[in-house]
Amino acid sequence: MWQQIELELPSMPRGFHLITEHIIRQCPEIKKYKVGLMHVFIKHTSASLTINENADPDVRHDLESYLHAITPEDAPYFKHMDEGSDDMPAHIKASLLGSSVTIPITHGALNLGLWQGIYLGEHRNVSHGRQLVITLNGE
Image (cartoon, rainbow, N blue to C red; front, side):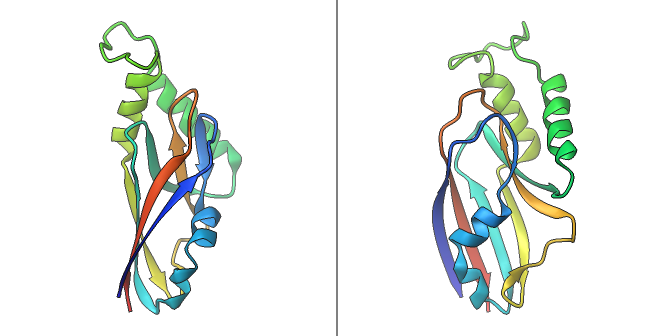
């Protein structure tokens, strides 16, 4: 069985935001699957998705701090600055982390590890809502 759901995340400030519960609330269809996969794709080039620790908020802070350090704004070697000094750094961060994650579904629930959550990486200083495409496959 295949299903596809598109949903919009609310605007969030720059940084890393746990969105696992938001996705689960917006996709009650997950409960129908005995075994399967959920693929989450973000339709943007300046934001990313990743899976990481969901308990300690310092992880979110440290991820943002590290990525900002390796992709600084206003670097003299960036040419693509059409939408501001955070434009090219946001694209690089999105490429480093990726635009999708895939999670197993087991007995109607996401089969994440005890300390794992799905993160939105918002890499722009001023953001807008972000669109996700959720594809479910299984039985």
